[in-house]
Structure formats: C-alpha cells, structure tokens
Length: 262
Image (cartoon, rainbow, N blue to C red; front, side, top):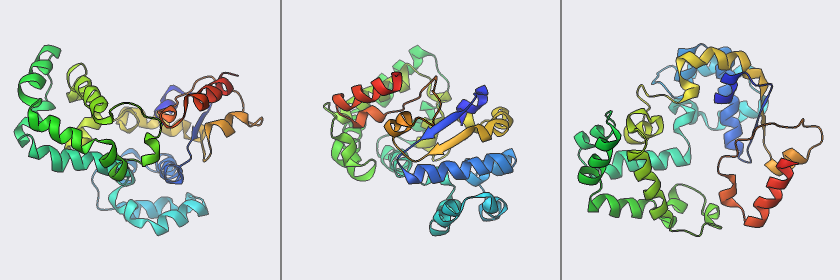
C-alpha cells in the first residue's frame, strides 16, 4: 500500500497465506470506497464502535471468497483486522503483559519520548537494560516460545543463530541508534495502538494518493517462484522481498534470486 504513494505502473502483492490475501482484499475495498476516517476505523487503526456498519457499506464490493471468509471470521471485523494477526498478538502480549514485569509504566512511556542519540544510549544502558529485561526477553523471544506463540516453528528450520540473542541485538539498535519516538511499530507493541505515530500507509496525507492508485494493486496467492515463472506476468523492475529467504535453504535462495534477476 505504501508503494502506491509513488504512483507506480503496477504493484503485485504475493503471499502464500490466504489470511494475508483476505486481509489485503478488505483493505483494498476500504481504501477504495471509504473516506480516511472510515477506512482507518474499519481496519483497526482508529478505535471504533461502528465497524459492523462500515463493513456493510463495502461488503457488496468484495468477492464471494472474501465475503465467505469474513462471514466465518466476523470477530476480525469487530476487532479491526490489523489487530488480529498471530504475530501482532504475540508482540503486544510482550508489550502489555511481560514488559510491565520489568519496568514501570512511567519508564515504558519514557522510552517513547524524543531524545538525542546520546540520551537514548544512556537511557538504554542505565535504565532499560537491567537483568530482568534480558532474562524475560530471552525467554519470551526464544526459538521455542516464539515458535509456539508467535511464528510457525517451520520458519526456524534454517536459522543457525541464537534467535533471542539476535533479536535482542536488533532491539538495542532500534532503541538507541533509531528514534523510538518515531517508531510506529514500537508504539503499537508497547501501547496496543499506534497513537499518533502512524505507519506511512495509514497517514492522512497519503490516503488520497493510495486511493487514486488502488486499482494498480493486484493480490496473488502463490509463491514468488511461480509468479516470476509465469510468462503472462510482465517484467518487474523493483522487488521488496520482505523476509522470505529466512525460510529457505541457501540453495533455494540462489535459485529464486537467479529467476528474479532473469
């Protein structure tokens, strides 16, 4: 959705997960047929008590497959679809339930206040990075706990590093080198909502640009391999491959990269 802001010729969204395709299908309709406030309320960015009515406004625009899916998962509509993902629930559980066992509410909110890089490093070293933080972080983000509660265990098949230690290093980087006050995802994890720090695709100034280009987005429930091998698909000039290579052997990765480059 963020790519549409740049007025591309076309955007192909490819995913093996039907849940992701259903989620994006509803977002497409929301961007296309609702105004900014309504769209953000329906998908869950803003709090709302009228999601049922907003869904009714656009349901006739959805395919039968999408309508059937949400008929069977209407609680996703009521909660706001961006709040229903397994990994989102896992991360907010850490922020809302585990982290309060480490730091006070005041300290947690202090993390989100604007600071210079030097101040962020000092805050992390002297206030945040205590023994309980390291212990509970390494337990909660261990391969076993994350595999059971956050991500499919099969995703770790080719991971050869200590998962928790690696994520802790990345987290330190995010809390010191980067600015937590501007990190929308950190706000969501710690508070269960974005507050006023919104991701690019959910900002009001970008809404009309996305709406204007929404028909340039098509969703594909398949692998990247099958997509690039299909002669009916035009050549693609830019790829955002997310983290798909985490779940592959080196040999698989090289084969797919060769096909993409070709």
